[in-house]
Length: 292
Image 1 (cartoon, rainbow, N blue to C red):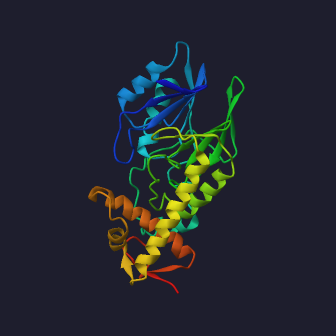
Image 2 (image 1 turned 90 degrees about the vertical axis):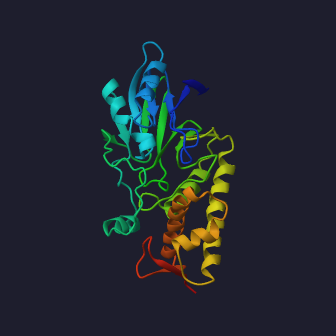
Image 3 (image 1 turned 30 degrees about the horizontal axis):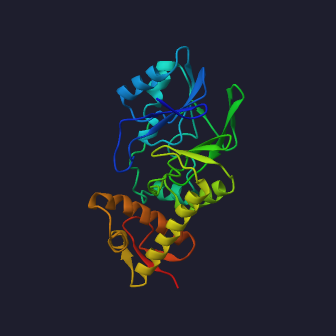
C-alpha cells in the first residue's frame, strides 16, 4: 500500500486486463479509523494485502463502493465480514436507472450486464450530497455521477475527487445499457466540469492533475463518435455490428463487443433526441436510420 496524497493510500488489485488497465485502485482514506473506497475484486490475496497494509492499531470504519461492477464491489462483503465495517453505496445494481433504461431492461431489450455484481447489496444507501464525517477534520462528499453505471458515485475529499470509472485517464469509459447511459454520462461530465476539483483519482490508472482538460476530452470524444454514427447512417439504415465495422477501424477484434455497447448507448441518446429511429423496436438487434 502506497501513499499518493496526504491522508490517501492506494493498493493495486491484481486484476489487470484490457478493461481494468493495470488493475483496480483500492483507496484507503484517513488514519486510525479508515475508509476504504472500492475494495476491488473477490481475491483473497488482495483482501490479505489490504488488511496487512493497515498501520498498527488501525481499523476499517466504513467501506464505500462507487458502483456494483465485480472489479469494484465483489470484495466488499468479505472485507465487511473480516472487519465489521458497513458497506455503503448508492443501492442495488439496478438503482438509479433512467426511465428509458428501466423500460428497456423490463422488456428484455437492453442486453448488457457485463461484469455486474448482481448480488450486491449495501448495508446502507448513500444519496447525492451526503457528507461522511471521517474524523480528524476530514469529510467526504457524495457525488452521484450516473453514466458508466446508473448508481455510480464519486467521492470528494476537499478538492480531490475519487472518480471510480466515470473519468479514466487512459481510456474512455465503457457505457453499456441499461446500466450505462450516455445521456446521463454527459450530464455528469457537465456537472463535474462546474465543480473545479484539483485532482482526480480514478479506480483504474494514474491520478489526473488536469481534471477540466480530461472532462473536455471525454465530452469531445463522445460528440465525435456521435458525428461518426450520423455520417455512417447517411449511407442508409444499419445495424450496430455494421456501425462498429465502419467506425472502429483500429481496435482489436476482442474489443468489438464493448464498442458495440458504446454504439448502442450513442444510438439510445440519439433516439431520445429524435435524430435516429430504430426498426422494428429500439434494442441492440434493431436497424437504425437517420431522421430528417
